[in-house]
Amino acid sequence: MPNAQYPVIKFVRNLMKIPPFVLASASPARRRLLQTVGIEPIVRPSDFDESQIQLSEPAELVKTLAQYKAETVAPQFESALIMGCDSVLSMNGEIYGKPADISEAIARWQIMQGNFGDLYTGHALIDIEQNRTLVKSQVTTVYFAQMSDKAIQAYVATGEPLKCAGAFAIEGFGSLFVEKIAGCHSNVIGLSLPLLRQMLGELEYDVTDFWQ
Image (cartoon, rainbow, N blue to C red; front, side):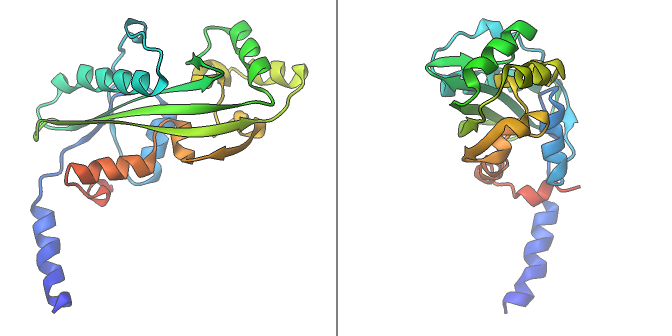
């Protein structure tokens, strides 16, 4: 009997209205992560001014920023699933986003090298049709290699650290200087794929509904 039921279940799923998936972020890394798992998002950067939000607790900071980014984009759509994200690195009680310039990036790496920090990413998912919003965070501990001043200056000269929260990209040159991580790998890139799957499930979607 289970085999006889499967076509019916599949037919019911096909009748579900699957909204377009919108990424409220200009991050190429987040877009590539989604594409890697079969989701082709509509990219609509929020351009939200992050300096408006001043919070000292990293998990609350990234969740708040992610939600504001998603909410900024949501009014542009009548029916869609809007995802906002934000990432920071927390180390020694300090919160680090993107470095402002080369000097700041070098100073950061002089602290980070041979040390470890927690990479927090906030995830906000707004389902316009259901009028539901989920906001969660994920954290991954990142252990950095010991580096010479020459290596730090060479890495910063690539320009990569200036584009990333925490001044490194684990999917780029920065992977050379990460010894190990504890936790979700994709979270360090900017979007936790396991957490996304769980959030979609809470909204009564299957992640495969969004496969292209």
